[in-house]
Length: 534
Image 1 (cartoon, rainbow, N blue to C red):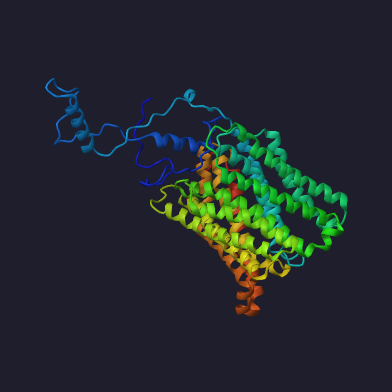
Image 2: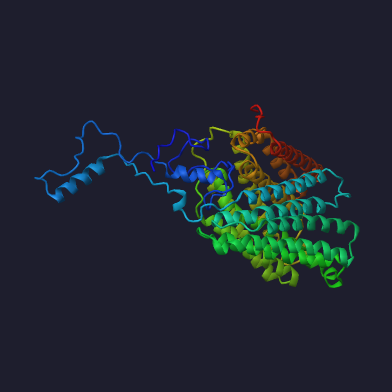
């Protein structure tokens, strides 16, 4: 099969760089199946572009004689070999074109992912609804939203957990070139996680202390988490591609962490006397398992492959990423165990691991941003700016939150006073997890959402509007919340701390609300409509 040379600009719309692989822009395939391992049309396009090379024979050089077909009778074979090697060394350093195998020659071709894409897209839509509710709750009076409890649980137990239930099995199957789990398992997992989270929050406000509602609500959430594990790891037994053990083990640890943390909360919701009596120690353990050991760990592990894809650079092993995943995977359960059993040394050992992991997250963000710096996007610059900017800034905020949380445990041990969610709301929740989730949604909508290339191009144009302003609002809001709630900074600003927190929450809610509104419009955009450039 002959392969033509690529044009001057790759399909991604970004000018090529010598140390960059083809950029995945996220065009979803309209067919029912695609080559094994291609989670979207971008992967298939990038695979073909990687094989499309310049012709193996360069144009003849004027000063060199034309090559002969064979050696003359007077030329010995060894001399002909030396002359051929000399001509090859003098030629420009072009590689030979790599063949593109026919579909029948590639094992596993025909793995249908269209249904799995639609399920993941629907789950992300439910997650976006939770995120919108969390943004709306930020502007409520503190007495109504119970301080940080309602926004945090809507964003984490609702939005983040539903997004993880939707996209984690999709990632594991696509990365390992495995067929997706059965649709019934996928849909049940998402429905049970999303519905269970809503039931838990409702029961907390209206049926706290009653065993039956607590068992139904918490049991639904836990059953959903179990099905997420089945959907994520069951298909890997038939994987055709290389496995990613670090990411897979991190996902498994995260699901175990949230199962333990949700079980603790279920017993408290049902009025268990033992859990209620030890809640001062179990509350930090519950928070560390769910916030850092589940949502944080899944985000960090997913960024090992998602962040380079969004930035348009190589997806390669990085020591910073390994440090981030291992530090958080080991540290968060240790800190939780230290709190639960009131063991200072255990909690501090876990905090030291999380501290190292936080620095790993920061270095990973810098490394990915540096690798993606050469070249510039020639199409959809606003969309690329928002998605890559959200993931880079989100990693820096997430690292800041991890370092702050670990530092308090290192200083205070397993004492309940060493845990507080308020100072972490800005860096860890708003600037970190929420911003990364928003950037991932903005990237994935044109990648796995329904529609053809024309519709996805229109979606990217719409989602890129006012990218700088939206990024500035969300990050400024996270910074103001941190400035007003972090004790050292709050002591400096004094009486203005409360006003800074309120202003920061309003800015974050505004930036998040506009982004979610654009996501909703883009999801329902007709292929015939292409919004004007911003």
